[in-house]
Length: 200
Image 1: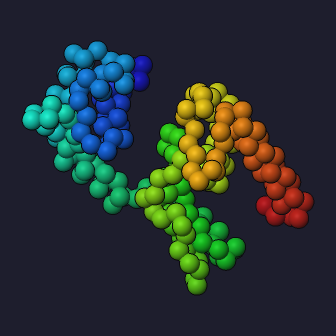
Image 2 (image 1 turned 180 degrees about the vertical axis):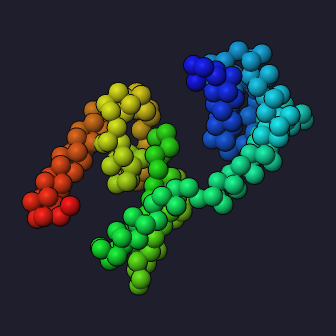
């Protein structure tokens, strides 16, 4: 982004609007991104001219435009993740006899993007398109455990970044780090055992 700060800021604006469940005032965008209001209004104007953002003058807010929808639809049509992962998931399901899913880490959430169901097996609880707090799921904890410690600290600077549901989930960053270390140890143990048995 150092060589194209305007492009980076424009993408930040789009990402922020996309994360919200409703259109957002320009002042809130400027505040949350730490940008001057004049910069935000300029970026919103450019994005609106190209259809990625729509201005709602009665509400004095900005929401996503039709071009953003078309971009998302194009991603679904191209399915780049599915192209890369389908063969691996097929082999995983054939080998284990269990259903599998592919999730990606998006901020502090995991987003489930592909499901491969084994014959005769029920649907997975995590349907495609479901987004859940990473620290509350096995998939999310596995991905968080693979991140550098500095990145985990940036995602979870304090306990307010943590979410609990039905009494589940870490209640402090110290507890989160301990749980991630346990995940790493289990992963190392599994890898060692697998190699000892002669698996690749």
